[in-house]
Length: 229
Image 1 (cartoon, rainbow, N blue to C red):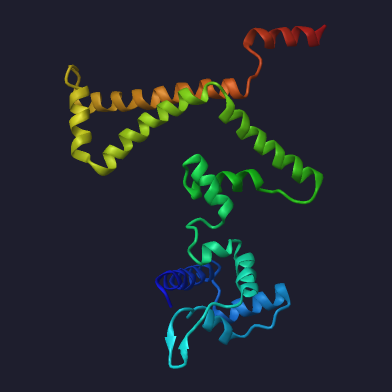
Image 2 (image 1 turned 180 degrees about the vertical axis):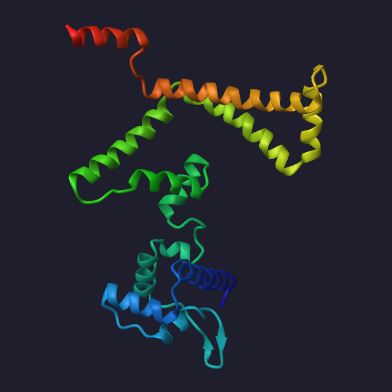
C-alpha cells in the first residue's frame, strides 16, 4: 500500500473501532445490528476483516471493503465515509465545512444542533418546537448586544486560560491589579474576579433584554389598566 492508503487504512481501523466502542458493540453485535437494520448477510469474519484493513497477512494486504459496505457502516454510525477513512476529522463533511466557516469546534456546533433538534420528529408539534428552538438562538445571536456580551466573555476566557496554563502569570496580573488597593489581598482578589464576572453578567442581562424583550414596568401597568377597563 502507498503512504496515502496506509494512512486511510489506519484511520479506518481506528475510527471504526471507536464507533463500535461508542455504542458498546462487539463484532457479533455489529453484525446482528447491521443485518437487522439493512437486511444484509454479514458475518463476524467480515467485521474482523474490516477491523484489519491495511494489515498484511500471508496472502497479502487486506483491502478496504466494498464502497457499498463502507456506506452502510457510515450510515449506521451516523458519519460520512470520509470520516472513517480520515479525509475529515469531523463526523461529516457538512460539519467540517461549518467548522471551517465559523472557526468553531465540531463539538460546539454539534451541541447547538443537538439542542435545536432535540425532540424533533414527524409531528407538527415536534416541528414547531424545532423551529421555536432555532428562533430562540437566532434572536440571541442576531441581537445588537451579542457582540458586547461576547467581548466580556472573551475577557473571562483570557483570564481563565492564563490561570489554567500559566498560574504564575495570573498571580502577577492579579498582584498588578491589586497594587493600589488598601484592602487585604484575598478580599481584593475576590473583588477583582467579582468585577469581571459582574461585567459579563450585566452584558448578558442586556443581551437577554434585547433578544427577548418584555414590557417595561410602565408598559405593564398600562396593560393592566387597559385590561381592567
